[in-house]
Image (cartoon, rainbow, N blue to C red; front, side, top):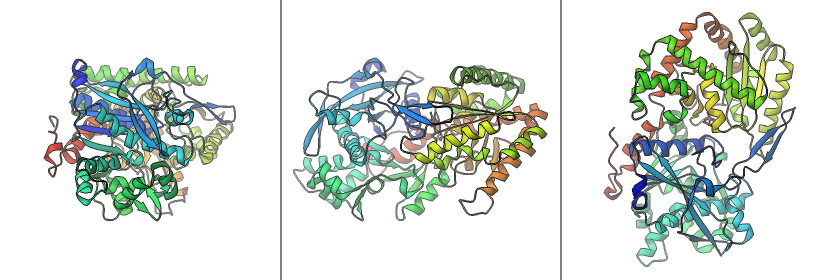
Length: 580
Ligand SMILES: *Cc1c(COP(=O)(O)O)cnc(C)c1O
C-alpha cells in the first residue's frame, strides 16, 4: 500500500539497465525494458514484494527523426524526473577511477490491481558535488564508449546494492539480474560478506553464499551480444583490488571480464527466456544448469480499450487473474470483430496524426514494429516486390505499417530503414507502406491492437523470446512468424496464427523463408481475411484464449517465485508462491 511504503521490505530486488514504466519515462530501448516494467506491474498485481533498480538515463534512449528517404537523425529524449519521480535523501557513493562518485536514488511507485505498490529505484549521478563528466554517467541508455558503459554498470551493480542498503532493505533479499549489465552487484555482495567477517579476501564460502541469493536471466542467444571489458580498462575503473576479487571468482575469460559469466558463476538459478532459448543457452554455456521461463506481457497494460471492455463483460476477473482470459473462447465472434474494428480505427487515426497518411479501414493491414536491428529483418516482406504486387492483384489489397529505431551506431539497421523507404516508393501504387518515426510504448499500444496481422521475421535462433506478438495476442491479433523464440510455443497453425517455415537451407539463405512467407499470405491468410471473415474472427478469438491466457507476466512472476526465488538451499530468502 502507498501508505506504508516507507516500511516496505522487498523480498526480491530486480536489477535492469532499462525499464519501461510510464510514457513520460523514456528509459528503455526495447523488449528488455518492457519486460522489466511488465514484471514489476505483475509483481504489484500479485503482491510479490519486489523492488526494481535501474539508472535514471536523463537523456533517455533517443528521439528518432526520419527524412523523406528514411535517413535517421537522433536527438536527446530529455525528460523531467522531478515531475514523475520522488527524490530520496539516501545519497550513496561508489568509487570509479579512484574518485568517489555520488549517486542520488529516485523512486517511482508501480501500483497493482489490488492496491499494492512497489518501488523502482532510479540511480542518478547528476549531482553538483560530482565532476561534470561523472554527472553525465547516467545520461544515455546504451550511449558512449566502452568505458562509459562499464562506469554505468558499476553504478547499477555496486551503486544499486549500496542504495538498497542505505534504504535499509533486508540484506537477505534475492537479487535478480535481468541480463548481465547488473552483474557487478555480485561483487558488492561478496565484498559485503567478507567485510562482515573482517576479511579483505573473498573466499569460497562467500561465493557460495552469494550464489544462493542470486538469480540470472540471460536474453542473448549469440556470444557477441554479451558485455565484455578488457582487463586494463576494468583495472582503471574498478582498481586492482577489485580486479583481484573478480579474478578469484573466475570471471575473467582470456583477459576480459565477461558480465554474462559473472552472472552465471554467481547465481544458483539461471534461465533463458523461452524453451528454445534455454536449450540454445545450455549449448552456449556448457556446465551451467540453464533453465527456461518464457517471457510474457502485462495483459491489462497491453489490451486496448475495446478489448478490455469486452473482457470486463465476459470475464470480469481477468485483470486480477489472467487465466480467466482462457474463457475468451466463449465470446461471440461478432463482438470480437466489433472490438477489433474499433481498435483498428484508433490505430489508423494515430497513423494519420503521426505519419500524415490516411490508410483504409477495409484493407488487410500488416504491422511490423520493433527495434530496427538487422537480425529482425524488417524488410524480409519486401524482398520480392514483383511477387508482392502479383499477390495483391490476385487476392486483394494490402497495406503495411512499420516502426522501429536503429541504434545510433547501427549502420546496417539504418540502411534497413532506408531500404523500406525505397521499396515503399517502388510499390506505391500497389501496396501502401508507412514507416512511423519514434517507436515507443505509446505507439506500440495502437499497433499491436489495430493490426490484422502481426509479422515477425527474425533470423533464427536470434530471437530469444520476442514479446510484441504476445501483446498482439491480448488484442486477438494473430501472428505470422518464423518459428523462433516464444512462437515455437505459441504457434498452432491456423488456430493462433501461422508459421513461416524455414526449410533446410543454410541459416543465412533466406530464400526458403521468403518463398514460404509469400505463399502463406497468398494461399492462406489473405483468402481467409477477404473470403471467410468468421473464420478469421475465430482465429483471433483463439489467439486470446490460448496465448494471452499464458504468455503474460502474471504467469512469468509466479514461475520466478516457484522456481527461482524460493530457494530451498537458503530458507531465509524463501518467498511463498502467490496464490498460484
Ligand atoms: C514490446 C516492445 C518491444 C519488443 O518487441 P519484440 O517483438 O520483442 O522485438 C520493443 N519496443 C517497444 C516500444 C515495445 O513496446
